Image (cartoon, rainbow, N blue to C red; front, side, top):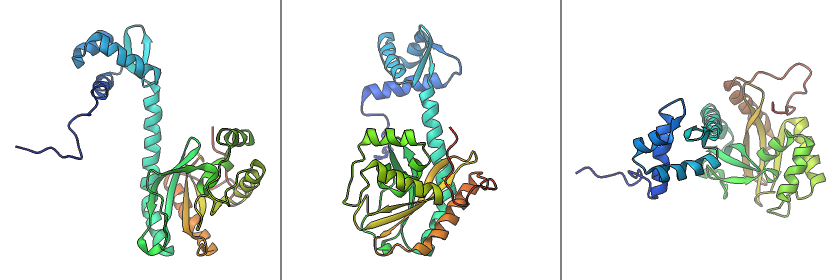
Length: 273
């Protein structure tokens, strides 16, 4: 008898999740809206159960109800799909250049993207020889204002958005070096805008410093940050041109064109909104 792969369960362990998957699969099979009756028949679920789950999915915008008694997939799935697609394309473009940069400097290289008020690490290149005690795992998160890449994204925001971020988060600190006051953060972001480079001076982890450069897509939008992490006493400023060159290489692979004539070299462009 064929054994099931323990890492790939045959079905979800929670029944309502299994039913939700079944409903989404039915909705995905047709472009037009489908009646509650047909959805119930095709999934084998009782109409009241079908209605209850679809109603909850509608609240979360995973399902739309264009008219009473009919349903179709919602825009939230498109939003999430585009987010995943963007991450995958950036990651694919970045992987080999990141490995080459790591080979040159022998320190961890990170690719991070913004998600809300945090960055999320989506790829990394590192080895045990780097001497780093802290290496952020893929999928790990960190506050924007405490990280080099996070500061790039804040620098690309307008002042009102930065103030709103400060109000929401309270600019909580992690170390004695953390920037926890808005005026200091605004000065730091002004430097990042002018140079196109942002820094983390032991603000997230004591003993670890980082420098980051932006990765841009074909629309000129900042979509990710490429950063080098190193023990605080080993961060070498000579790595900066290599970091910027690698970030530019990844951006070019995404279709990004050089900044218009007259824009300061390295300056951080505002994202297209």
